[in-house]
Structure formats: C-alpha cells, structure tokens
Image (tube, rainbow over all chains, first blue to last red; front, side):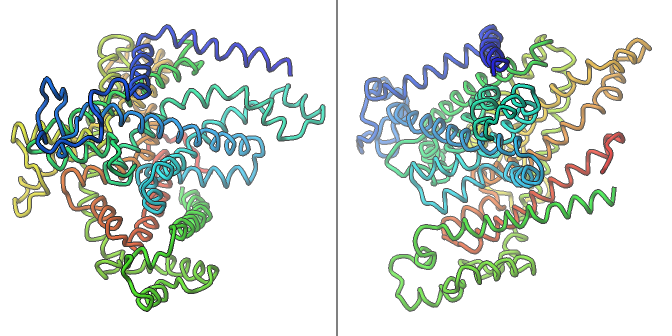
Length: 288
Length: 313
C-alpha cells in the first residue's frame, strides 16, 4: 500500500510540470476558461434576451446594435450564442463524466478479471468503438426522443467504449505489481483492490483523455442539434443556430458563420488542452 | 492466413449476436407504442392493431426475438414503412453514392495526410512540424457540418466556383466531379488530419530505431531512407487508424451528404428518422453493424500485407 502512495502522488505533479511548460496548453486553458465563464455569466454579458423576438429587425447583418446580426425571428445572434455555450458545456461535461465513470469501471473490471470475460467484453467494445459515434448517438437520440437528458445519455453511451479501453491497459500492468499482490495476500476483496489500490494509480490516464472526449462530445452535440435531435427549440444551441443559418445560407451568412466559429473555438481549445495533457502523461513522449 | 481469417470470422459471430441483440433491445426501448409513433396520434385503434400484428409487436418478446434473428440471418431486413420497398433495396439504391464520396475522401486524406505527417516527423520541432500539427488540430476540431457549411459559403455562395446543391445530374463526368469536389474535400480534410497525426507519431517512433541509424550510417540517402526504411515500418498504426476512422467517416459522410444535398446513406437515415420509418432504421443499424465488423476484420488482415513479420495465429 505504501508502495503505491508515492507513485500516485508524484505522477499528477509530473504531468502538471510538463503540461505547464507547454505554451499551447495555456492557450487552450485560457480559451476554455473564457468560454466557461461566458456560459456561467451569460445573463450578465448577453446584450439581449436570447428568446426575445423582434420581427421588424429580422435577418439584420452585423451592426453596432446587433454585433453579430439577428436571426429569422429578429433574435440577437450574439446573445443566443452566449446562452448556447451553456448547453454545449453542460452536455459535453456531464456526458463525458458519465462515460468516464462507467467506462473506467468496465475497463478496470475487464483488466482485473481477464480471461474469457475480458475477451468477450473487449470484442464488444471494439465494435462499439468502430461504430460511428454520430450514428450511434443519432439512433439512440432518435429512439429516446429529443431532450437535454436524452441527449446527454445518447452521447455518454457512445463514449463508454474508449474510456473502457483506456482504463483496461494500465489495470493489466498494475494488477501484476507487488502492492496489489500484497493486498491480495492481506485478504482484501477484489472490489477493494480495484477501487482503492488500482483506481488511484490509473485515474490520471483516464482523466487526461477526458478533455479530448469532451471535445468529441461537444462536436456530437452540435451535430445532433444540427440534425434536429438536440435540445428542442426555442432554446439556443450552436448546432440548431447553424441549422437555421444553413437554411438561410444564401442571404444571411452570419447566422451560420458565428456559431460555427464558437464550436470550432471550443473544440479546438479542448483538443489543445487534451493534446498537451496526453503528451505530458505519456512517459515516452516526455523522455524525448 | 486463411486459417486466421476463418478464425477471425468465427470470433466475430458472438460479437455480431450481441450487437444484434442490442439493436433489438434498443428499437424496443422506444418510449410508447411504436405503432402509435409510426401512425401518429390520430390513428384508430383498429389500424394500430393491424400495424402491431404486421410488425409482430403483438407477440411475446421471446417470439419476437427469435423471429428477428431468423429474419436477419436469412437476409430479410423487412420493408421500409414509408416507401414499401425492401430495406436492402433502399440501401443499395444510395450506397454507390456514399461509397464514391468516402473513397474520394480516403484518397484525398491519404494523399495529403501521409506527406504532411512524414514532413512533420522528419522536421520535428521545427516550423514544418508546428504548421502540420496546427493544420491537423484544426482538421480534428471541425465538426463535418461546420467545415461543410464554411466551404459552401466560401466556394459556392461567395466565389460561385462550384454548385451549391446536389450531385450534378446529367452533367457527365465533369459535372459529377464538380459536385463531388466540395463534399469529398470536406471529408478528406478531416481524414487528412487523422492520418497526418498518426503518421507523425508512428514515424517518430520508427525514426528512433537502431536500424534507421544503421541505414543512415551506411549512406542510404534520405528520400530512400524515409520511404523504404521508415515509412513502410510506420504503416501499421496508420492502417489501424484508417480502419478505425471508417466509422467516423461514415458518420461524417451523413452530415456531409445533408449539407451538400447529395443522395446517400446520410439522407436515407435522416429521411427514415423524420418519417419515423422504424424498420428502415433497424435495417440500417444492422447493416452498419455488419459493415463495421467486416472492416475491423479487413483491417486486421491488412497488417500482414504491409508487414511480413505479423504472424497470424
């Protein structure tokens, strides 16, 4: 047990050291912080009510009054974009956390138990992994019906497999180490060994991937909203705003372009962050 | 090799069975009565009853399951509720168009992604590397519909170089290529990003090997060294990614087809969703599951073609 403690304590610190030296990671972190703060303070920042319609001022190009123009109902695009950040962040974060929890549990179990159970589960997860995330999400969302909760469930299901794979690999290595053997010799049950001895030693591998998968979750959310399977209107989401812009692509370019840039910025920031974290966590890359 | 292929195929059977069971359960998890969902709120009790009987929904769940499995393994995926045509026929009708698009995207992705990744690895931590990494990070971050719409706005709406809508009917080969250009570039650029990233990291691993140093010491010229000695050995992870990416590619092609108004699986799925065509959706899921499993097997088999050291056990 004591053998495990130093590894658990120093590994995150080492990851942080490498991470904080990477300039790109700070750009990603700053962007994410900005987007999350915008989402939290939406009511304070947004110049207009995102649902307030003004039929006289419909489809107005960007101006001093409406910085990013107005949509087909005369609603302020900037305000809607600011509020839409909430949906994307919440869906991305909650879905990823659910997938991370369930996926890690499956991965640890597979790695620890091994044998036929492991082979079978992994075969299954491989197929889930290869199945188009978007299609899987689309089918599930379509079956469950469009709502915030169902959207989160659908996206979470699509991301269980990758987390299970990530969690399984270190578990296999860890279970052969002395401290796990010692735990077993002391008579600890499998649940305690998996939860108390293995989990803390591999959790950083899983968390590191969280940012990359949150980026993917936000992309899927946007795509599902675009198709019409996201949070139902009139709630603003980036995906549904782009849809509206797409339907008016010939005469109102701003409707599609600005929410597109918002998605791009969010996903890019999470990817930058995730890349930096992964590089920092990978001992091979760090050594070079 | 044949032995391995057979074994691999046999191992896929339990996976397929579980997948099919999952699809069966998923479709039956639809909240409410599927018959009511299909026919709408106004349907009479009599017509609901007829539809339930037609779909076999009035049978016990066990009987439904056996019938479902029987149908799948005898190739009966049922009939589309909206068009009345067999599901397989519906799919075969639009499949060539989707295959055309995905193949074009894979070719573009490999043609651009491989050199980009190789250059990044060879010029590691210098500007070509940074440029390549930023380009591929952007490619990874673009949801397919976002990049599609931006391409459409720039090249079709603003510049007017390419058609805004649809695959050019009757335009001959030139018209076909013109209408294929934007959608395939859209998908290809995303593919490029994946290929470039994995090529870079795989090449970095290989370039550090002893045999590369030996070859260099023997005076092998850099182009030959990179192409023959390094890239060939770096190919396995690249093939894995291309194989794994197949699923994402199909998913993205759905969005791309919607944006560029091309016929294909994407529009078929969307149509099925909008029309609540429940048998078509179920059939599509089954066909995707089979496709994905087959591509996985093909990916595994492809390893042996590029790397003779791979032993099929």
